[in-house]
Amino acid sequence: MGKVTIFPETSVRPITLIGARAGCCWGADVSDDAKNYKRGLDCIESNHGRTLEYVNVEMMLDGYSARVIREWYTHIGGAPTRLQASTRYINYSDFEYVTPPKIEADPKAKEIYDRVMREISAAGKELEELGIPREDSAMILPLGMTTKIVDRRNLRNLIDMSRQRMCTRAYHEYRELFSDICAALSDYSEEWKYIIDTQMKPKCEVLGYCTEKYSCGRRPKAEK
Ligand SMILES: Cc1cc2nc3c(=O)[nH]c(=O)nc-3n(C[C@H](O)[C@H](O)[C@H](O)COP(=O)(O)OP(=O)(O)OC[C@H]3O[C@@H](n4cnc5c(N)ncnc54)[C@H](O)[C@@H]3O)c2cc1C
Image 1 (spheres, rainbow, N blue to C red):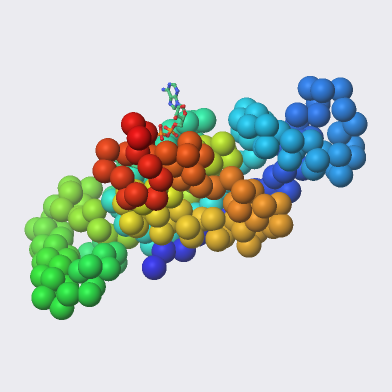
Image 2 (cartoon, rainbow, N blue to C red):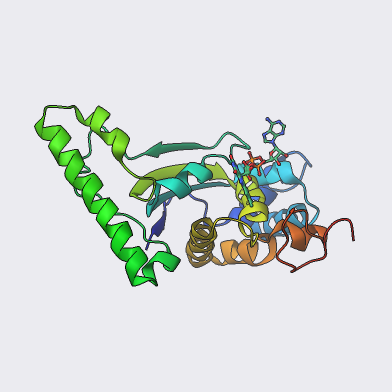
């Protein structure tokens, strides 16, 4: 079970911030936060995407698999930044790992899965005893092991991510991770709750049809 921690550098009032920055360019009175909030809402509802880029989210994602973080790294719009736990300095001889639900539910599959993880862990220790440096023995670590990243990206990127990753076709751990992020931001402030409730949705909900080759059927396919 992963954990999302929202850092205090994340604006508690993202809508007000959007309105304040947009107001600078409209000759508006940006000292009035009620007006900033209203202007921010207008920007969001009018889909003025560039204004969303003034809201940064700084967070730590901890306990998700290295595999899902590999997919996380494909969302590069707006040049996000991140740091990931080192495989060189951290001792992974007893690494933790994510067990997918279908494996968890099948005792035989779980026995195989856990055995492979134990064998990798034991092999790592043997290589270390032979004097192989950790940066080399780390090559055998599995994608299922958990990792930790600190990440900063803007609101526009996160909304765009929801289009892909709230899709039923997205990898299930990513969908869970994205849902954890939405829950953490919703708890962070009322303005965030509004943004999550109104803006985070899969692409089919925005387009009114599905663009995926293999559709879940929630919306009709594009050609229909
Ligand atoms: C069901 C599913 C299966 C997938 N399978 C795979 C897979 O097998 N392998 C894989 O690698 N990925 C896979 N992905 C990930 C997917 O291909 C994208 O890499 C991911 O969604 C991030 O890219 P993005 O364009 O959505 O987001 P971002 O990179 O964050 O881009 C956001 C938006 O910014 C703009 N933008 C970004 N970069 C540029 C640019 N250079 N030039 C102009 N405009 C830009 C575009 O408008 C873009 O839509 C899969 C995703 C899904 C949902």
